[in-house]
Image 1 (spheres, rainbow, N blue to C red):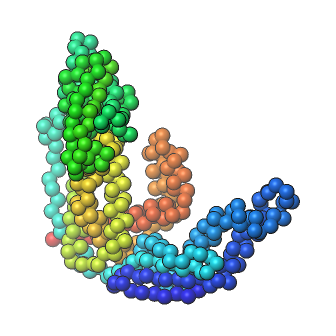
Image 2: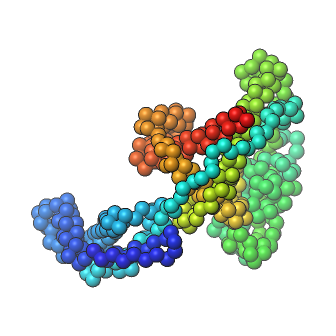
Image 3: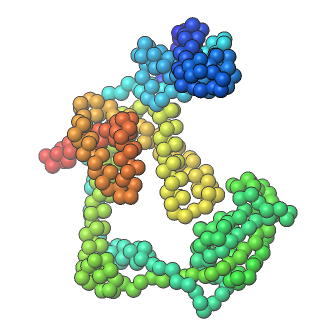
Length: 428
């Protein structure tokens, strides 16, 4: 194995590896021998299929598996021999994969910056006063009422109004030809500009139930959905039925539906829940304030691959949240594009925070034992409801359990900073 190490920047490394032909041959021979023992080809006894025939039928598969195996093994070997520890899994760039000639590839990655965190004890962050007003309780009661709303079929009119729920189909045509993604099968749509893409709410409003309606819309050249950009689309809408949301009355009966004796008891429970949430929010602000102070006092160079990983995770979280809120694919894509710069800044901050908190945990010798990890996993699985089996399977994988252990370790390090800041304040 020939290894060449380059340092494109202070933290970035590029390790170029070339595997010796003899090792490639040994690995190919091994792969074909294992394949021969398990494959059955017509006209040949089990285990006696000739290699040329195996190469003809399975060559691409075998080469792919051998390349993957060699890349994985030799990357790890090169990292171990040179005491290199990537902060994020290396990006592999192949340069030569013709196994008759050579196997040459590069592993590009960042190292964790060396960091000794200072001045994180005795910090002071003002804690906000925690209170819940009657207006807060009223707003929470209204949100609870909204969640209990039901849909009722509209029988006294047939024309769609803004805010209605319409059971409808939608089709889009350009020059008389249907759009590939322009058809919406019969489904219940809330008719507002926030819940229906492409401005179709303006076409649906005013439509007569069970009477097809047609309307045209022209989209700009830079429109987010490329299939519609720069085109005039004829939209055809067919509304089958209309529904409206009905909100329950907030009274004693409403409270009993929530499992309480009367409205006063419900309001008291809502107030208690709001106080608990306010306390959690206050604690989160204290923690964030302390982290801000520590980051100000401890500048750190952040590996670009760590920022990229954090940004990708945040994009995934945002994508799932937006989809769960009922937005269309186009609306989700547009929102992600608008949020790109903000996500980049937040990803950089999250990456800095993880580096600093991990360094504090290392300095303070903070550890999370197997028993504590098992208890947390059990709690997460228990609270996951219908997804219990899927979550349990997720945490059976060692890498996922270690990820949770790292999260718990950071939580303990933050608890340590908070406790010391509080004790310092109390001593004055």
